[in-house]
Image (cartoon, rainbow over all chains, first blue to last red):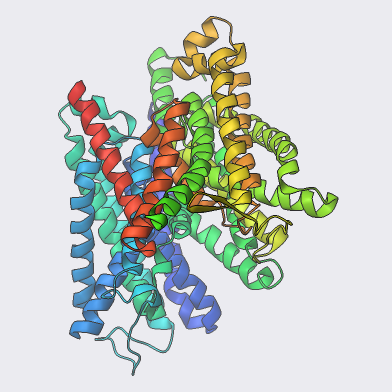
Length: 353
Length: 287
């Protein structure tokens, strides 16, 4: 219906406007905010949101719920760090090297694993993450449990090494933006449609000529490469990595922004990350001396509340509220595709909702 | 040879716990087709419950087991009724998955907030008592725990096999719609199964306290091993879960004995991935 089309167009315009304004604000923040603490939180938001977007490509878009993204991130960090420390390579080149290595590892390891569906895939991703962590802990080449440190020195763009947080802030912002545009591109491409078809019904996707294994491998490789990029960024920022980077809890943490924000949307992880991470950091700084774990407790409560009451996430909630007048209230609890179907059905039957 | 026998017995005794955890997970997974990612945290809650009961009332940890079972059953039933049943309706696997992940986070961080991160133990007079069985020495608490959990496994097996409620649970696990058609209240069965699952995890926790330290992330490794047990032992099979748990315990100690203790986790995870993939390949072949 034309009203539907209008609503969608108006929504897209609003989103573009809001994103443009938001970007301007983010570019200007370091000019006005000098506190390293605040800037640190923003850098954290940037790389966690990027990691979450990487998860979202596989989890939200393809429906393969991985719980091993911390392992890709850790592997990427290790691959680039070791190339820097052992071979003295340039950090930017080693970032590319790390991404390629992790992409290959993910592709090769998950190729046989994609015959597994649903919960079994999740189990393999957990086992893969833990196996990688145990492997690094036991390997002298990877520095065992004591980790790898990157050299300190004077500020330099070539070595991606700074005393101040401002350059990291801008690189982080650029990374988020780049990955967001990449995800948006994927979402609108043939691959994006194929992935969403696989998410809804793998057998049906195969029946209409989409090769599920091929697209799932593509998704897992892209997702792992983005996670490896985040790993490189993290390593350059913190300048020290250890196997604790890859613990199971970190994988869970990387999923939360996406699920809270709305896993069906590319913007979901950004929304979730912007809301959840500053809140979590605030609680950590404020209460962790007295009550350790309070920030993760809040994370857990937010996650449970969102899943229980607004299963499509914050963004899904907002989107539904925009289309509420077309859709039955009960549908708010269903995944977006079902809502879409219901709208279509109503359109064809000509009934008023 | 003596070391080998000792390792076998240790593996067997530890494997019993994996079996018990796996059975709880198996019941839940079999009936609702959801993976309970907070199963390990339920074990941890059981440990802290035992700790609280035994320090507050001076009860022996093993006497706490029935109370822990009842309390954990109630906790599981409440969680199922308020959180999981409503989300089952959305049929979104992602949401169900992260619901249990979120519950796990809630429980482990809740324990961290309430009890702090220090390691706790429940001191008992018999903690350091060893019994000699031929060439093998067995710690008394481990032996008692193992006997108790064998009894529990047998009771659970009989319950699912012979009682009416057990038959109803199996009916729902095989075909929920068909079960509803013949007049079984599926929601009630869901509550019952989740309660039983959490109670089993809690009991495993209570039995562990005799010789294991209590800390907020104590359950994590058991939780994952429970999933391995379900996959290896076969869906819905209680004897399968029992033997898979024992197998896992033995595998761990054998790797620790013949290769290196630090590799046991790595080998367990890799074995798991291989078993999963090979099993799926066999299933596809058969079709």
